[in-house]
Image (cartoon, one colour):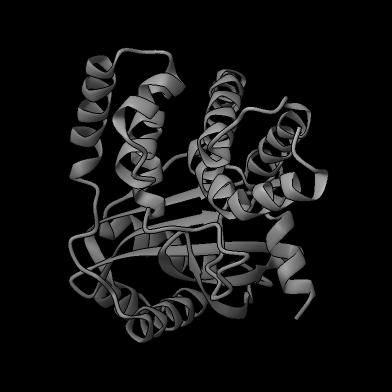
Length: 292
């Protein structure tokens, strides 16, 4: 067995990558951290003879995630209202980075995949794991894994953003939307939102949120102007943020409810709004806000 310090160094070198993989598989920061911790415990107990720590740890995390997805999917069947992944804030620190180039919209597209399709797509297409190693990880023949990845690729292909949004433009639109929604400015909202805009709101039954997705410009404008007329409505802007690859912002709503607001922007207009208010999904965000 290699010396403990060498084993720990091998693991720490892989930790950011393992966290990215687990989060993309599970859509939960806390569950991803638990899975990676379990992978460490397994790695710490493994006997000598592992030539490639990265391959061993990737395989361990993937299999743990597949087990976790069985119970996660059962929980989502009884989830109150719309389900969104735990929001992940962008960071410029490569040692802390968990995000990659997969956006929240792509993560939602992956929710429609089977667990094996999801794993095959992430390992092969996103993390560049060789096909034979993916097959060994999933316990399938390479030809079967190739089909899994191909099916997954077709499902998510249409969800890739067609237009990259510069950070400055994203923040400008986010600030304009926040002000228009806060003030109930119908004209400004109409100018900012796309005709087919969709509003997703995840409260998980813990706090007030829209139970169903709100679709269409007219409904969205009526919704935001109606909310703005409610007594005591005066949301507070906290800061701009990149949330799972999308521009957005953090805010405080009535009753001190923290929420993240991610905006999918197409051709200068907001095509989708993803609002997470469930406090159980915002613990890591609350820590970031509290540290500022």
